[in-house]
Image (cartoon, rainbow, N blue to C red; front, side):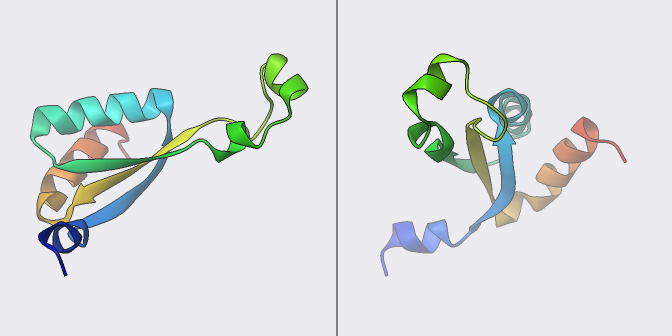
Length: 87
């Protein structure tokens, strides 16, 4: 196994967020020094019919970004998420 695949194993999915929400989360992660990686899911847009796209899309057609955070940054992730989404 390469070092990159070993490093990839240290990143776990936090979940999928829409663009606006992910911008807020990622900004806070950068401030807190959280290591993260992203995976963009634009399949709803790629699979959309041109007429639907020209009318602005529809329910369930928004793009999402899946955020992966490093396992060693778990405490920082919890602190950021708790501040953004208090229970």
